Each structure stands twice: as structure tokens, then as C-alpha cells.
Image 1 (tube, helix red, strand yellow):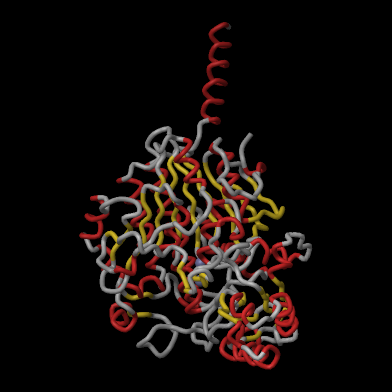
Image 2: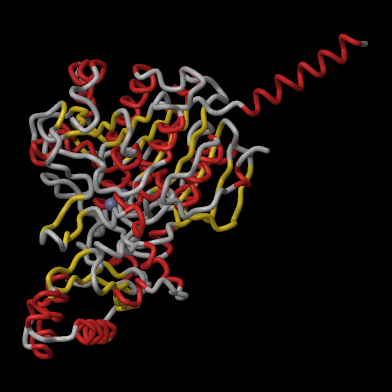
Length: 540
Ligand code: ZN
Ligand code: ZN
């Protein structure tokens, strides 16, 4: 009897110990440009081991949104991992106008560091423009820098921003003639030996092959017809139809860079992530490590072929297999139940507006050049000076304060006149001024999203929002950047150690992810977090 009691106590003790043990590895997966409805649109043909494993054995937040604009890759990746929005982390776009230096800057460009793994000066990158910490940074501090953080993506910004400032490494893919994984001296003096060896094997070359559909093309019933007028395609192939001979097309499409715009770009990422887990010994001890993996080819394919294309459907059916491969490797290398995964996206995408128009749904194109010419003419007729407008970028206007002062004009008057002019333009939904945005009392829902994306120091003087499905883009392919639901609604799936099984339609937001992961790890939230802990996804 006594032994029986002891066994029960011992069982309870070990059971509670097992449940309270932290994940050995957190894997944050971002699928670039993945709309929420891709989970439901393609679900019938997903395997049980990829997306569906996370959807049905983890927690599915079905009403998850970005709560700011512009919904671009740089801000998206920064927001997911910092638990805040551009107003605090400062990554206000991919490229933006630095009004203090009078030049356009790229979100991760850093000329004070040198590239690793390539001689190209194009790869001088670091997270120095991101103003707040990621949960990986906090985990580094919490573990006395014993818990590692590694970031991996085809895109530099998709690897660098998620991993944060104190990351051990961030690796991204360099295409063109090289086809290699590269990094920067920001992280270390040289590439780890395993990366040099991996690049030397030249395994990437095997993906320069034919891209045909995974299943018979007639079975792709969740997309439009393969041959249509809404796709951009590759140079050197007139029709945007399967199959694509990548070997033959690479010459005219920047060599290895062509792989980025095919599902094989995602295969390359999985290959490299599996190697990184093994060689960096991620999740091997009880101190939590962090791995961030961003699959970017989905974005390139979306831009090139559009939301409704067979190419996009095929890319997701293949990504499902890549996910399964990554999860299998985590089971093997870290152990079942020993790691926690979340999967989300950095923004969604709009259906090709021309396709919507042809199907009676309101959609428009705004020509950038004539939009700017209109503003110039207005400024010339009203204030006799069109140069008081310094720059238009990311749906914001930057004014020249010095010139306005010299011309003895009132900044307030110029701003209000421009606001009025813009509100009277076709396809204009809202126009907000800097003084409205810095007051921080916005009750208008779209205004709030603009405000959350507005950095008080570095953003512009007037911000505008175009009507739904209005873009400045070519008439082929899809894009993103707006505060509309098609750009903000993305998947959020949690799975693994410490995560409940379940689903919710409760609204969750991008800045909730990092505080939730931090809570799971028992660490502080990143330093500028504005999100909430999604306690309903965490096991008691
Ligand atoms: Zn993106
Ligand atoms: Zn994009």
C-alpha cells in the first residue's frame, strides 16, 4: 500500500516536472505573404505532417491580424519578434526616406559591417535600425548568453530582424552567380565552418531543374486557369504556364536568384535549417535556444504570379512538405515534445486588381508618376513652390521644413491644404496629418493602424490610405502594404511544448506573439512590447 502511494506521488512529481519543463528550442516560422485563407483554400491537399499537424495538434488563432500599416516584410518580421509595431521598433518600411540624411535607406543595410561568404558589397547588413529587442534578445540576456539565437531566410531582412541584436548568427541566401548562404561581420569574424562546408558542396545547383506541378495540373481546382493574363512570369518564357525549365531560364533571370521565385527557394531554406539545428546543436540542452526560419519564396511567387495562380497553389502544396520535413527533423534532433513552434506570416496580399475588376469587384490602379505630378502642380499653383515636397514613399509625404520656413509659409497651412487636396483625389480612403497622428487619440480603426505604423521621429508629414484593392503596381501579380483585411489577416499557429490544443476566432494581433512566447519561457517580454499574452494557448 505504502509503495503504491509512493509511486503515485513520484508519478505526480515527474509528471508535473515534465509539464513545467521549458522548451529546449523555440522555432518561429514566418511564411512571407501568406494570407490566412491559404490554410483553408489548400487544406484538402495538405498532408497530416505539415500545416495540419500545427492546425490540429496545436492552437489555431483563426482571426489573427497585423495592427498597423504599411504591411511589408521588414516591419512584419520586426513586429512579430519584438511584440510591438513600427511606431516603437522603428522599422517603418523595407526602404524609407531618411529625412535627416536626405537619402533612401534599406531597413537592414549597414555600411559599417562587411559581408561573410561573398565579396559582394551588397550584403553589408545588420539589425542596427531596429530600435527594440526581440524575444531572442531577451532570452540571450536571461540565459547569460548561453541560449543561442539563429535566424535563417532567403531574404536578409527575413533572417536579421527576427533574430535580433544579440543573435549568434543570421544567414541569408545570395543568388546571382553564387548560390550560397552568407552573413555579415556584425555576428562573427568568419562564417562557421559548417556553413563554408555546406556552401562548398554546391547542393543548391540540384534545384536548377524543371518546375512542374507536384500533382496532375487538372487537379489544381483551388486556383484559376494556368494560362491567364494576370501573371508576370519569367524572362525568356512567353507564356506563364507550367512547366518552367529553370536551368534554361536562369541565365536571363539573374542565375541562382531565379530559385527565390520558385518553391525550391523554400527547399533550400529547409535544407539549411536542418543543417543549422544539427551543427549549432540547437535544443540539445535544457537552456532554451531560438531558431527563426522565414520562408520567402511564397512572397516572390505571389508577386510574380498572383494570389489566384496555380503556381501559388503548387508552392503551398510543396511548402507543406517542407514543413513536414522540418518538423520531422526537429522530432529527431531535439525530440518530440521538447520544442515549441509558431507559424505566422509577415503580411497577406491582394488579389490581382485587374482580375477583381474583370469579375465586377471594385479595384483600381494608381499611377505613381501622375499622382506625384498632381501634387506638384497643386503646390505650384497654391504656394508657388513644388519643391516643398521632399519625398513620397510608403504612402507618406515628407515636407521640406527649411524651405517652407524660408518661403515664410506656415507648415500647418501647407499640411492642411495638402490633406484637403489628397482627400479629393480618386481612390483616396483617408488622409492623416502628422499632428493628428502624434496626438495618439485616434478612434478611427484605420487611423489607429496608420498610427501604430507611424514613428514620430522618422515618419512623414502626411499619411494616406487608398481605397480597398487599389495599388500602385503592374497589372500582373499581387502585392501588399495596405491596412485592409486581405493584407492584415494571416495565420497564427502554435504547436508543441507548453501549447494547448485548440482554436479561437478571438482577435489576436501581431504584437501578441512575442509576449506570449516570453510568457511560455518565463522571461521578460521584449523591451517595447505593446501586445498581450495569449494565455489561452499556453498549457496550465
Ligand atoms: Zn513579406
Ligand atoms: Zn512582398
